[in-house]
Every structure is written in structure tokens, then in C-alpha cells.
Length: 484
Ligand code: NAD
Image (cartoon, rainbow, N blue to C red; front, top):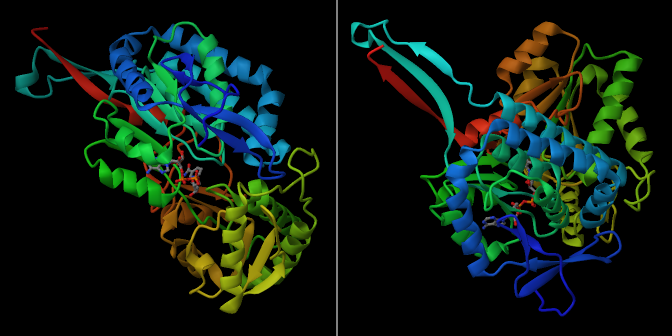
């Protein structure tokens, strides 16, 4: 943290730009360049943002749907207009190859569009007859949903815009004030979203803030009783710490994973294996493996294992690594040198315990070469932890029973991909896999932003996807009419 005379980027306090006494630099993990300097809110400023959010809740809930929908449509339009600039900013602060950053902006546009539609549909409610019992004769029940109160949204570094969008857009659609806390490594995209929100008309003063609060000051915000809803996306350690510290709050946890791609015996033609290998190689290493649903484990039937492995290794070797700002780059650096060092140590641990490196296994600064491991022993760290790096492990099994058991042999459960043409096996995977989503015919990394998305086990609880997040931010309140 520094105190600097140079003007840092303002944060957003109750819808207006503001600066505090301190600031911090945001640097590129690719070349160490300073990407920006961000102002940090003082304790008094955080207090006034929370007070404003609490003060805005009734006005926001009463804002007409067409006003909230128009604001959300405006945000979608402005994000689309500024797409290239924002994609470049995501790449600069996060190290993500620019082609993936462009995809991320496109997804955020879609999240705001969906939210505009959901805002129009929201709270139509339902009527329930009560004369099914003698005591209910002459009565009618109506249901509507109301915000639980202001939301504290806490976002990770790996999708600095889209995972922020997944918190802000449903809050606006539901009429719930939100205080957004972006990740310290990547606050700039969220602050640009703040600029766009500030251009909209119709959102009550105080209904939103974007506050880059340092981690050591977060416990006070987490505990604040005026923020009854916490929507957290990040690591399982921090997420569970937060949830355990506020047992009476409504906490949504979108946490980590070690997603598996299963390739079953029937997925065996040349074309099948080409597709599976291409999807596995791409989604093991896109964003340097820093996605909660990156492919970390390949679980392949023995009958297709060798042919698949040959193709996966060939495709991983063909990936273009390097400068994330270059259009041709497939795999850029990790978010920091420390992250790459940690991945390196885990690969060394695996090798010391008997794993074979088929390709990769080399670090240079913050970059870690896309790596494929075979014969990963069960006691290696990578066999159970979330790699969050470009490291894939290959596992040979016999039949669907063993394959599904291997997927479930994990403390995580976010998504799984199953390559099969067999409808019975597809339904069986859906029934038996302990995950939040099963993707048939593709990698586990497929996500459409309107789908319910979230995990089981240590991968979290609650669901994002605009409508599902709106459910989390609101609760159903019934109105009973008597004497009809
Ligand atoms: P992280 O847990 O380190 O940080 C997440 C956020 O929590 C950041 O904004 C951070 O500043 C904040 N934070 C840190 N300490 C805090 C505290 N004590 N109180 C309150 N907030 C605190 O995670 P990260 O490294 O930014 O992100 C990577 C993790 O996120 C991975 O585990 C990944 O799988 C997970 N993730 C999950 C999903 C999902 O939807 N399930 C999506 C993306 C990322």
C-alpha cells in the first residue's frame, strides 16, 4: 500500500467516484508493468457505503421493473460498445490471453441482457387457493419475492468482469443494493463497470458501490449486520471461513474444483477422439488453468486411453504460449509468479512420488508450461487439491462404474464432462455424479450464463446464473387475503 501524489483510479461509493488516503498498484504478471493504481476506501467511506446501501433498500425494491431493466440493458450496450478496451484491460490486469478476455466481455454482456429480461419477469408471483380446507374458505394466498437486504458480493481474480457481472446484474434485477468487493489483483475491470453503472439513470443513490477493500479489513464488512446476504466466489478456504464466521447470514459459496473429463468406451471413433482431445487440451489450459471448471483430471476407459493420450499430448504441445496481448496466444502467464511457483512445487511433488511428465513441467517467471501428467499417485498433492494451473492428469479406468467412482472420489464437485453417445450412460452420469452440472459430449468447462451454476461438497452451495442468484438474494413472502 502506498500514499502517492499521482491521482489513482477512483472507487465507487454509493454510485459516485471517490478516493481515499491510500492506494495500491495493479501490475501485469506478464511483464511486471504497472497497469494502474487504485484508491482504497477509508473505514469511514466503507461505513458510508454500507449506510447508503441500507438506506436505499426500500427505494430500490420499489423501483419499477422497466427502470431496472432499462438500466441493465444500458449496461449491456455500453459493455458491448467498449468491449475491445475492456478485454485489453482484463488481459493487462489478469494475464489472460486477449481472445479469452474478449469472450469474457461477451459473456458479461449476455449476463446483463439476461438480467434485464429477468427484471421484467421478476415478482409476478402466484395465487394459491386456500379453500382446500374448511378454514381457508373465503381466503386467497398470493406469493411475491422481496430482497433479503443489501448484498455483499466478493469476487475472485480469474474472471474480473464476468464473475462481477454475476453478482451485480442479479442484484439490480431483484432490486437489492449491492456492495461489490473485487479481487485485489484485478480491480480495474470492476471499476470500469462502475463507470458504466454511473451513467445509467434510475438506480437509487446508494444502491451500489464498488469498494476495493483490503483483505485484512474484510472481516468487519463480512460481519456487518446491515449486509444480510453474502455472495462469495473464490477459494474454498476463504469461502468456508466467511460462512463459518456468519452462521446467521444467507451465504452463497461458489468455490473451487478439480473437474474431470470422462471418456467412455463408446467414444472411440477417430472423430470422437479428435474432438475430446481438442476440448480437453483447450479447457485444461485456457486462462492458464485458472478456471474453477478447468479440466484437471482425464478419466478414460482403457480401450481408448492410449489413442486419446497421444492426441491430447500432441494438442497441448501445439498450444501457443506467450504474450497474452497477442491474438495468437493460447496460454499466457498465471496471475503471479508466486502462483506459478506453487504449481511447480506441486508438479515436483507429483514427480517425486512417481508421476510421469508427458509434456511441460517448466516454469519461467509467472508462466508455467502446459503440463500433462500420467500415473499420478493418490498421495500426490495434485491428486486431491485444486491445481488452478495448466496441469492435467490422466487416469486409466475400466468401464463406467470405475469412471464415475473416480469422478466422485474428490472432496470437490462443481462440474464433470462425460464423452459418451449412450443416452442411458448420460442419464446415469446425471444421476450418479456428485457435481452441480454434468456436460455430455464436451469438457466440464462449458457454462452458459443463464444456467444454474454452482457446486456440492467443498465446491460450495447456492447457485449463480441470473435467475438463480435472484432467488438467493430474495425470499418469498406470502400475502393472505381473508373475507373474499
Ligand atoms: P480467494 O479466495 O483468494 O479470493 C476471493 C476473494 O475473496 C477476493 O476478492 C479476496 O480479496 C477476498 N478475500 C480474501 N480474504 C478474505 C477475507 N478474509 N474475507 C473476505 N474476503 C476475502 O480466491 P482467488 O484466488 O481470487 O480465486 C480463485 C479461486 O476462486 C479458485 O479456488 C477458484 O476455483 C474459485 N472460483 C470459483 C468459481 C465458481 O463459480 N465456483 C469461479 C471462479 C473462481
